Length: 287
Image 1 (cartoon, rainbow, N blue to C red):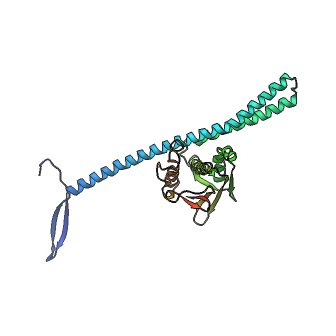
Image 2: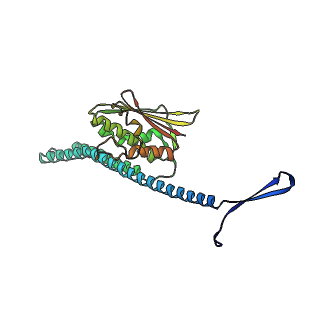
Image 3: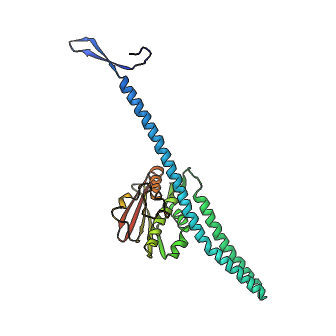
Protein backbone atom coordinates (compact mmCIF):
# COMPACT_ATOMS: atom_id res chain seq x y z
CA UNK A 1 0.00 0.00 0.00
CA UNK A 2 1.00 3.59 -0.52
CA UNK A 3 2.22 4.88 2.84
CA UNK A 4 0.38 8.17 2.29
CA UNK A 5 -2.91 6.40 1.52
CA UNK A 6 -5.48 6.31 4.31
CA UNK A 7 -7.25 2.98 4.43
CA UNK A 8 -10.23 1.92 6.53
CA UNK A 9 -10.60 -1.34 8.43
CA UNK A 10 -13.21 -2.93 10.66
CA UNK A 11 -12.04 -4.74 13.77
CA UNK A 12 -14.17 -7.71 14.91
CA UNK A 13 -13.80 -9.43 18.27
CA UNK A 14 -15.42 -12.80 19.05
CA UNK A 15 -15.01 -15.31 21.86
CA UNK A 16 -12.58 -18.09 21.02
CA UNK A 17 -14.66 -21.31 20.71
CA UNK A 18 -12.20 -23.51 22.65
CA UNK A 19 -11.47 -21.03 25.41
CA UNK A 20 -14.02 -18.32 26.19
CA UNK A 21 -11.45 -16.40 28.23
CA UNK A 22 -9.70 -15.59 24.97
CA UNK A 23 -10.91 -13.35 22.18
CA UNK A 24 -10.39 -13.88 18.49
CA UNK A 25 -9.68 -10.67 16.59
CA UNK A 26 -10.09 -10.20 12.85
CA UNK A 27 -9.26 -7.16 10.77
CA UNK A 28 -11.28 -6.58 7.57
CA UNK A 29 -10.27 -4.11 4.90
CA UNK A 30 -13.40 -2.07 4.05
CA UNK A 31 -11.71 0.67 2.07
CA UNK A 32 -13.13 -0.40 -1.30
CA UNK A 33 -16.60 -0.71 0.23
CA UNK A 34 -16.25 2.77 1.79
CA UNK A 35 -15.15 4.33 -1.51
CA UNK A 36 -18.01 2.63 -3.36
CA UNK A 37 -20.50 3.92 -0.78
CA UNK A 38 -19.15 7.47 -1.03
CA UNK A 39 -19.25 7.35 -4.85
CA UNK A 40 -22.86 6.10 -4.73
CA UNK A 41 -23.80 8.89 -2.32
CA UNK A 42 -22.16 11.40 -4.65
CA UNK A 43 -24.05 10.01 -7.67
CA UNK A 44 -27.34 10.07 -5.76
CA UNK A 45 -26.72 13.69 -4.77
CA UNK A 46 -25.93 14.66 -8.38
CA UNK A 47 -29.05 12.85 -9.66
CA UNK A 48 -31.18 14.48 -6.96
CA UNK A 49 -29.88 17.91 -7.93
CA UNK A 50 -30.53 17.16 -11.61
CA UNK A 51 -34.09 15.97 -10.84
CA UNK A 52 -34.75 19.06 -8.72
CA UNK A 53 -33.46 21.29 -11.51
CA UNK A 54 -35.64 19.46 -14.06
CA UNK A 55 -38.65 19.79 -11.77
CA UNK A 56 -38.03 23.54 -11.37
CA UNK A 57 -37.72 23.93 -15.14
CA UNK A 58 -40.97 22.02 -15.72
CA UNK A 59 -42.69 24.02 -12.99
CA UNK A 60 -41.57 27.29 -14.58
CA UNK A 61 -42.60 26.16 -18.06
CA UNK A 62 -45.94 25.02 -16.68
CA UNK A 63 -46.47 28.45 -15.13
CA UNK A 64 -45.61 30.17 -18.42
CA UNK A 65 -47.93 27.82 -20.30
CA UNK A 66 -50.74 28.48 -17.84
CA UNK A 67 -50.00 32.20 -18.05
CA UNK A 68 -50.27 32.07 -21.84
CA UNK A 69 -53.61 30.28 -21.61
CA UNK A 70 -54.87 32.80 -19.07
CA UNK A 71 -53.76 35.77 -21.17
CA UNK A 72 -55.67 34.27 -24.09
CA UNK A 73 -58.72 33.78 -21.87
CA UNK A 74 -58.53 37.31 -20.50
CA UNK A 75 -58.05 38.76 -24.00
CA UNK A 76 -61.14 36.87 -25.14
CA UNK A 77 -63.15 37.97 -22.10
CA UNK A 78 -62.05 41.59 -22.53
CA UNK A 79 -63.37 41.74 -26.10
CA UNK A 80 -66.99 41.64 -25.01
CA UNK A 81 -66.83 44.54 -22.50
CA UNK A 82 -64.60 46.55 -24.86
CA UNK A 83 -67.08 46.08 -27.70
CA UNK A 84 -69.93 47.01 -25.34
CA UNK A 85 -68.08 50.14 -24.17
CA UNK A 86 -67.49 51.10 -27.79
CA UNK A 87 -71.20 50.67 -28.54
CA UNK A 88 -72.21 52.70 -25.46
CA UNK A 89 -69.80 55.47 -26.47
CA UNK A 90 -71.10 55.51 -30.07
CA UNK A 91 -74.67 55.68 -28.75
CA UNK A 92 -73.82 58.69 -26.57
CA UNK A 93 -72.18 60.48 -29.51
CA UNK A 94 -75.26 59.85 -31.70
CA UNK A 95 -77.63 61.12 -29.01
CA UNK A 96 -75.39 64.14 -28.44
CA UNK A 97 -75.44 64.99 -32.15
CA UNK A 98 -79.22 64.68 -32.11
CA UNK A 99 -79.36 66.80 -28.95
CA UNK A 100 -81.22 63.94 -27.28
CA UNK A 101 -79.04 63.60 -24.20
CA UNK A 102 -80.62 63.83 -20.78
CA UNK A 103 -79.66 63.02 -17.20
CA UNK A 104 -81.20 59.54 -17.33
CA UNK A 105 -79.25 58.53 -20.45
CA UNK A 106 -75.98 59.86 -19.04
CA UNK A 107 -76.54 58.09 -15.70
CA UNK A 108 -77.39 54.84 -17.50
CA UNK A 109 -74.25 55.16 -19.65
CA UNK A 110 -72.13 55.83 -16.57
CA UNK A 111 -73.54 52.85 -14.63
CA UNK A 112 -73.19 50.41 -17.51
CA UNK A 113 -69.68 51.61 -18.33
CA UNK A 114 -68.57 51.33 -14.71
CA UNK A 115 -69.99 47.81 -14.48
CA UNK A 116 -67.97 46.75 -17.52
CA UNK A 117 -64.82 48.44 -16.22
CA UNK A 118 -65.25 46.65 -12.87
CA UNK A 119 -65.55 43.33 -14.68
CA UNK A 120 -62.35 43.98 -16.65
CA UNK A 121 -60.58 45.05 -13.46
CA UNK A 122 -61.70 41.90 -11.63
CA UNK A 123 -60.21 39.80 -14.43
CA UNK A 124 -56.84 41.51 -14.03
CA UNK A 125 -57.04 41.09 -10.23
CA UNK A 126 -57.76 37.39 -10.62
CA UNK A 127 -54.87 37.08 -13.07
CA UNK A 128 -52.46 38.83 -10.67
CA UNK A 129 -53.56 36.78 -7.66
CA UNK A 130 -53.33 33.57 -9.64
CA UNK A 131 -49.59 33.89 -10.24
CA UNK A 132 -48.65 35.46 -6.94
CA UNK A 133 -46.18 33.18 -5.15
CA UNK A 134 -47.83 32.10 -1.89
CA UNK A 135 -45.76 29.23 -0.56
CA UNK A 136 -47.13 29.84 2.93
CA UNK A 137 -50.09 27.61 3.61
CA UNK A 138 -53.37 29.44 4.11
CA UNK A 139 -56.87 28.27 4.96
CA UNK A 140 -59.17 28.79 1.98
CA UNK A 141 -62.66 27.87 0.85
CA UNK A 142 -62.56 25.11 -1.78
CA UNK A 143 -65.81 26.10 -3.47
CA UNK A 144 -64.82 29.78 -3.68
CA UNK A 145 -61.46 28.86 -5.24
CA UNK A 146 -63.16 26.69 -7.86
CA UNK A 147 -65.51 29.56 -8.73
CA UNK A 148 -62.51 31.91 -9.05
CA UNK A 149 -60.76 29.52 -11.44
CA UNK A 150 -64.04 29.06 -13.33
CA UNK A 151 -64.51 32.84 -13.71
CA UNK A 152 -61.46 32.92 -15.99
CA UNK A 153 -63.17 30.55 -18.41
CA UNK A 154 -66.85 31.42 -18.03
CA UNK A 155 -67.18 33.46 -21.25
CA UNK A 156 -65.35 30.85 -23.35
CA UNK A 157 -67.48 28.07 -21.85
CA UNK A 158 -70.70 30.02 -22.42
CA UNK A 159 -69.68 30.84 -26.01
CA UNK A 160 -69.20 27.12 -26.72
CA UNK A 161 -72.39 26.16 -24.85
CA UNK A 162 -70.55 24.22 -22.16
CA UNK A 163 -72.45 24.18 -18.88
CA UNK A 164 -70.72 23.78 -15.51
CA UNK A 165 -72.48 22.38 -12.44
CA UNK A 166 -70.89 22.62 -8.99
CA UNK A 167 -72.20 20.33 -6.25
CA UNK A 168 -71.06 21.19 -2.74
CA UNK A 169 -73.49 20.83 0.16
CA UNK A 170 -71.41 22.71 2.74
CA UNK A 171 -68.44 25.06 2.80
CA UNK A 172 -65.27 22.99 2.91
CA UNK A 173 -61.94 24.53 3.86
CA UNK A 174 -58.42 23.36 3.17
CA UNK A 175 -55.05 24.39 4.58
CA UNK A 176 -52.78 24.68 1.57
CA UNK A 177 -51.70 26.73 -1.42
CA UNK A 178 -54.75 28.45 -2.89
CA UNK A 179 -53.15 29.61 -6.14
CA UNK A 180 -51.68 26.18 -6.90
CA UNK A 181 -55.05 24.58 -6.23
CA UNK A 182 -56.76 27.01 -8.64
CA UNK A 183 -54.09 26.28 -11.26
CA UNK A 184 -54.93 22.57 -11.01
CA UNK A 185 -58.67 23.21 -11.43
CA UNK A 186 -58.04 25.58 -14.35
CA UNK A 187 -55.84 23.02 -16.11
CA UNK A 188 -58.46 20.28 -15.81
CA UNK A 189 -61.31 22.56 -16.92
CA UNK A 190 -59.20 23.76 -19.85
CA UNK A 191 -58.66 20.17 -20.98
CA UNK A 192 -62.39 19.47 -20.85
CA UNK A 193 -63.14 22.71 -22.70
CA UNK A 194 -60.60 21.89 -25.42
CA UNK A 195 -62.08 18.39 -25.80
CA UNK A 196 -65.57 19.84 -26.34
CA UNK A 197 -64.29 22.42 -28.84
CA UNK A 198 -62.15 19.93 -30.79
CA UNK A 199 -65.19 17.69 -31.24
CA UNK A 200 -67.52 20.62 -31.91
CA UNK A 201 -69.71 19.32 -29.13
CA UNK A 202 -71.96 20.96 -26.56
CA UNK A 203 -72.10 19.44 -23.09
CA UNK A 204 -71.52 19.90 -19.43
CA UNK A 205 -68.91 19.58 -16.71
CA UNK A 206 -69.96 18.49 -13.24
CA UNK A 207 -67.77 19.27 -10.23
CA UNK A 208 -68.64 17.46 -7.00
CA UNK A 209 -66.89 18.37 -3.74
CA UNK A 210 -67.16 16.26 -0.60
CA UNK A 211 -65.12 15.41 2.45
CA UNK A 212 -64.65 12.10 4.21
CA UNK A 213 -64.77 12.94 7.91
CA UNK A 214 -63.66 9.45 9.02
CA UNK A 215 -60.62 9.19 6.74
CA UNK A 216 -60.06 12.99 6.84
CA UNK A 217 -59.56 13.69 3.16
CA UNK A 218 -61.14 16.01 0.62
CA UNK A 219 -62.60 14.44 -2.52
CA UNK A 220 -63.17 16.35 -5.76
CA UNK A 221 -64.67 14.75 -8.86
CA UNK A 222 -64.71 16.57 -12.21
CA UNK A 223 -66.76 14.76 -14.86
CA UNK A 224 -67.37 15.86 -18.44
CA UNK A 225 -69.23 14.28 -21.35
CA UNK A 226 -66.82 15.39 -24.07
CA UNK A 227 -66.28 11.88 -25.47
CA UNK A 228 -63.41 10.58 -23.38
CA UNK A 229 -59.76 9.81 -24.12
CA UNK A 230 -58.47 7.10 -26.45
CA UNK A 231 -57.75 3.96 -24.42
CA UNK A 232 -54.20 3.55 -25.74
CA UNK A 233 -53.13 6.95 -24.37
CA UNK A 234 -55.23 7.37 -21.21
CA UNK A 235 -52.47 5.79 -19.09
CA UNK A 236 -49.90 8.31 -20.40
CA UNK A 237 -51.71 11.59 -19.77
CA UNK A 238 -49.69 12.43 -16.64
CA UNK A 239 -46.34 11.97 -18.38
CA UNK A 240 -44.30 15.17 -18.89
CA UNK A 241 -44.60 16.67 -22.38
CA UNK A 242 -47.19 14.10 -23.45
CA UNK A 243 -50.07 15.81 -25.24
CA UNK A 244 -52.82 14.95 -27.70
CA UNK A 245 -52.98 18.57 -28.90
CA UNK A 246 -51.37 20.07 -31.96
CA UNK A 247 -47.88 21.47 -31.56
CA UNK A 248 -49.06 25.08 -31.25
CA UNK A 249 -51.98 24.26 -28.95
CA UNK A 250 -50.32 22.93 -25.83
CA UNK A 251 -47.08 22.00 -24.08
CA UNK A 252 -48.19 18.72 -22.53
CA UNK A 253 -46.95 19.69 -19.06
CA UNK A 254 -50.25 20.90 -17.58
CA UNK A 255 -51.52 17.57 -16.24
CA UNK A 256 -48.01 16.45 -15.30
CA UNK A 257 -47.59 19.54 -13.11
CA UNK A 258 -51.08 18.98 -11.65
CA UNK A 259 -49.90 15.55 -10.53
CA UNK A 260 -46.61 16.91 -9.16
CA UNK A 261 -48.32 19.71 -7.19
CA UNK A 262 -51.00 17.40 -5.76
CA UNK A 263 -48.54 14.67 -4.76
CA UNK A 264 -45.60 16.78 -3.56
CA UNK A 265 -47.19 20.01 -2.28
CA UNK A 266 -50.54 18.65 -1.09
CA UNK A 267 -49.60 15.00 -0.33
CA UNK A 268 -52.68 13.87 -2.24
CA UNK A 269 -53.36 11.91 -5.38
CA UNK A 270 -55.05 12.45 -8.75
CA UNK A 271 -56.53 9.96 -11.17
CA UNK A 272 -58.17 10.36 -14.57
CA UNK A 273 -60.24 7.66 -16.29
CA UNK A 274 -62.79 7.32 -19.05
CA UNK A 275 -66.25 7.43 -17.53
CA UNK A 276 -69.51 6.90 -19.42
CA UNK A 277 -69.39 9.43 -22.31
CA UNK A 278 -66.45 11.43 -21.04
CA UNK A 279 -63.65 11.69 -18.49
CA UNK A 280 -63.72 11.58 -14.70
CA UNK A 281 -60.91 13.25 -12.79
CA UNK A 282 -60.68 12.37 -9.10
CA UNK A 283 -58.58 14.38 -6.65
CA UNK A 284 -58.01 13.27 -3.04
CA UNK A 285 -56.28 15.66 -0.64
CA UNK A 286 -55.71 15.05 3.10
CA UNK A 287 -57.43 17.63 5.33
